[in-house]
Image 1 (tube, helix red, strand yellow):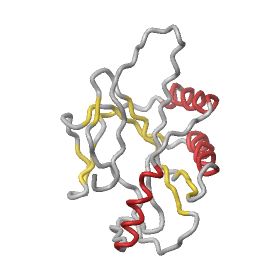
Image 2 (tube, one colour):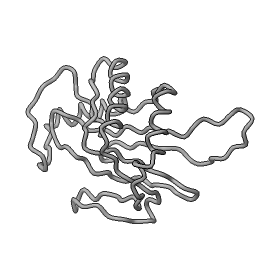
Image 3 (tube, one colour):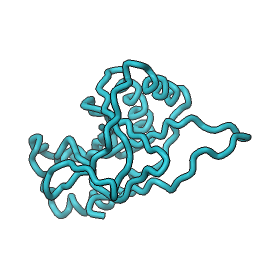
Image 4 (cartoon, rainbow, N blue to C red):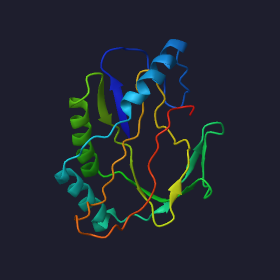
Length: 181
């Protein structure tokens, strides 16, 4: 639910459910912009603590379900444990959106090309347990437009380990692929 909007150019939005057909110039421009949008940003510890507290509250105890993948060619979601093993639950609480809006404002303040906003449809909380993983895959997009670009905001809310703690979490890295990669 994390969407950047360009601060300069304008265009016409397409209706929900329609496939965007960007012009060749727009497609080239988007492919050049994508690397600029993949970056590491700091989120203050107070905000992360609020996120952790929110997810730990009893009313946030929605059941986790197996994560799904998305097939753009079939326009459907599916489950495949050879490609992804994780659990997900969707949140729709206004308090969570309020917290994430602050994060989007902070990121926007540091960007001279885009203004980022949170679409208040749902927030996916994804958990990876021992042995969990994901391979390169497509995710479902909630908006198709030639004006608004939809991106995913990944926040790791795992509390930092004290310097003298044994390493409890081992794993690979998160690789973000652009469209068509």
